[in-house]
Image 1 (cartoon, rainbow, N blue to C red):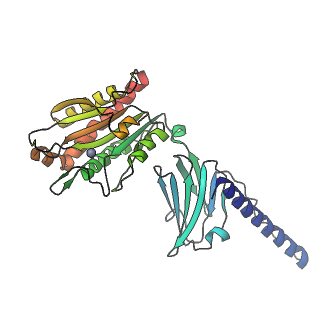
Image 2: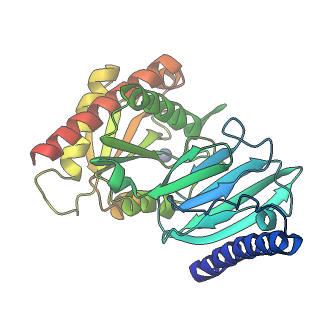
Amino acid sequence: MSGLEIMDYNTQQVQRQAQKAEKEEKEVTEEGGEPQPQEDVIVITHQMQLELPKGADKSNVKVIENLISRRIDIRIPGADENYIYDYMVLGESGDMESLDYSSEGGSGTVALTMDKAVEADYSFDEEYLYLDFFSPRELHDRIVVVDAGHGGGAPGAVAGTHYEKNITLGIVQYLKAYFDEADDASIGVYYTRLDDSNPSLSERVGLANDLQADLFLSVHINSLKGNTGVEGVEVMYNELAPDTAFDTQDFAQICLDEEVAALGAKKRSIINGNKIYIIRHSAAPVALVEVGFMNNPNELARLVDPGYQQKAAKGLYQALLKSLDRLDES
Ligand SMILES: [Zn+2]
């Protein structure tokens, strides 16, 4: 469905509503009875509003946003296959590319595909769910994108029963907890994944570029076969990126310093990583932090420890805050 069709569709909805009101008016006239109160005129004050079926309200309607796939799914309990025809679904967002509806097992899903990464702000009243869409740039002064390396069918480095994808996700979840706790609306933090999914490399760096991120941080765990003595923190940056007041090299250096300080780990160095797809394609200053080496049994034992993962997250959190300060100064 194209944007135009959605407008047509909504026009139909409005027309249908108008016809319904007209018909009711006519019936009243024909019956010659008391004039009945007319249906309220619907004034659209939000970019989208959805009428809720009985039993659906803010306690059970779910709005699931996925910025990477530019999708917003609205799960509505009690919405059957006719919901989309029987209820008012009105919208006039220029950001919307398509609207699809499906129902299964007594609950319906309105799936919105947006033409760019937008955040939905939503609220409820007795009858309606209201949505407004904002580009993250409208909501926050600074934008950070955090990427937990690998995921899903791509475990990354493997050591015995331990997968890199789980360690990176553990660290990123702690990092999110720090940002959530600080609750600073001036900084918008977006994550390429917060579960065991595996966005493509172009989706990961694409999110950072879409959002015009100020910083793009990717978290990985190193592995070097045949050298069990190797250890410590290493950070990749893009040597080919333009040299600016605060660039990828500065960001990588701060990540290295802060991570080493937080973990008490061995300080290795920042290294050129422009052969790495997400580094090469990042418009924002990028740092890919290799927190430690999984092939070193001693470091592996630390890396899988939640306490150590939390410390790693604290180091990255400090690094991001410090880098944002530096950006403000530059
Ligand atoms: Zn990796």
